[in-house]
Amino acid sequence: MLQAASDIATDQGVPAVTLDAVAERAGVTKGALQYHFANKQGLLDALFEQTLTRFEQQMHMRIAEGVAQGAPKHGAAARAYLRTTLDETSPAASTNVLRVLVAAMMTDPAIRERYAAPMRKWTRPDPLPLEAAARLMICRLAADGLWISDLLGYQNMPTRLRAEVVRQLEQLALAKD
Image 1 (tube, rainbow, N blue to C red):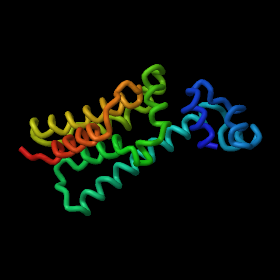
Image 2: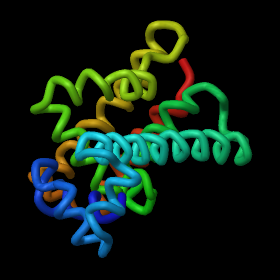
Image 3: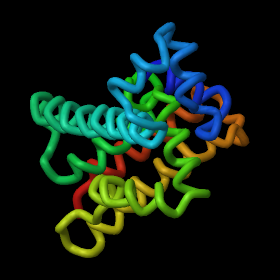
Image 4: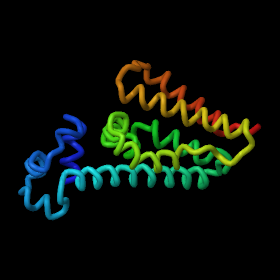
């Protein structure tokens, strides 16, 4: 049912996610859908929560991978954010629901208020000296910019150039003062 809601939100936007449309797409009765989700807001909340949970799991997995590979602890969260946000093979990055959520946050103050806290958690400055914290914040902001340009579809960057941009951001996140 959440996949059906995700598909509709991605294809037609959040306003098109109605209980009737989701039930039809999922192949269940509206009553069966309402057994799990009393209303549209409950369905959207569950969909967005699932998406945020997946993103957070990817962040933790990326940090653990870095530790296992011997990467320095310094900048680990920034590198995990870069990879989770920009790796197109990542389940968190490839989910269009996160894009829908961000788009909804831009136009709906209630959604923005509700989901700003987890977003701030992932992008908060590292507790490091000013120059190091600024460098890691630059990496996050650049990742956000690339992600948003992908979302809006206005960046027609060749694959090799995009890969090099990401590689350089990762190198910047590895650098120490």
